[in-house]
Image (cartoon, rainbow, N blue to C red; front, side, top):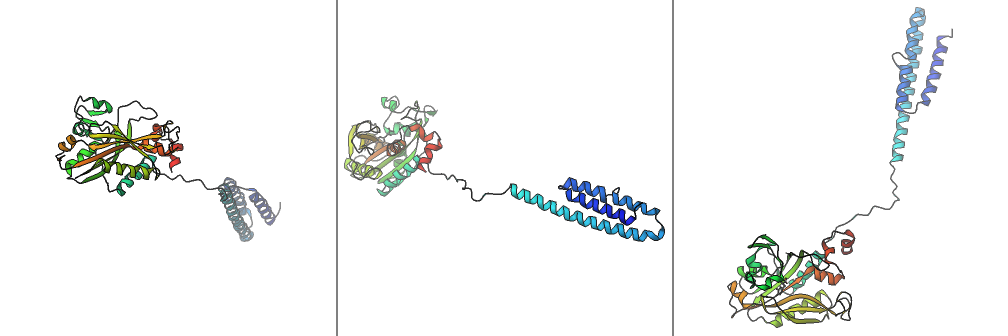
Length: 344
Ligand code: DAH
């Protein structure tokens, strides 16, 4: 039988050789069990020392302990190596290629209607008008009656109405009711612009939506005339479109103004020569306006002998459509990012 020293040396070589092939944690654990475990190879040798002569045992024990420490050290080294290799592999797998182009951040932007609303309001602010607002759920009184549109008046056909609680409560069909609310709580002079949502019970098509925005204007003071109204509207048209935009005023009927009129501007796209936007006419109808009807003034307690006023109302989407050559009003609330991002 080989000497103890030879046997231990053989064990050492075999163990180290095998350790070098262990490449992951399970293999390491198996190796440790095989050589260093309670029933492992080294323990087997040590148990056999009981058969040695008493004087040989200390040397054998020392040799076995030395081997045990050597194997433990080798094990720890290998374990460290494997952990480092695993970490390297993980880093490699998770490596970030910093030369790749960055992912684009999507920034939000104001809705085209909001952008136009702010432009319109700021022009009127420069002209001396204060911004105010009114309720979207409105009383029939403000939306119609106080505006000289009694129940059963045929002019009600001009506004198809959503009723919240018929017949008294409705969704306002225009921003004109805020004129009445303003005049009720202030004494002349009054000069306000009122942006806001309006609702109409209408079939939708390229130029009609059941919800849209208007901007209303109202001025009341002593001695205001049609000339003031025209001056303000021309100034507005020339600021929102071109400084030399031509304006055309024509008679129109609205129960709450007398006289009433419609303002058209020279088409800002073709500048009057005729195009798709103006349907070859050269003109774009922009808004309704007029001198506040004496009956409306009286309803809020103003004296039409002392003060006079003018008012106007325009559709915001319509102006945004003209300014940006948009041919379908439904695009505004269709939530199509391809449309909206053009205004970012
Ligand atoms: N409220 C009207 C509409 O929605 C527009 C309008 C016309 C407003 C004449 C006015 C005005 O203030 O004077 O059709």
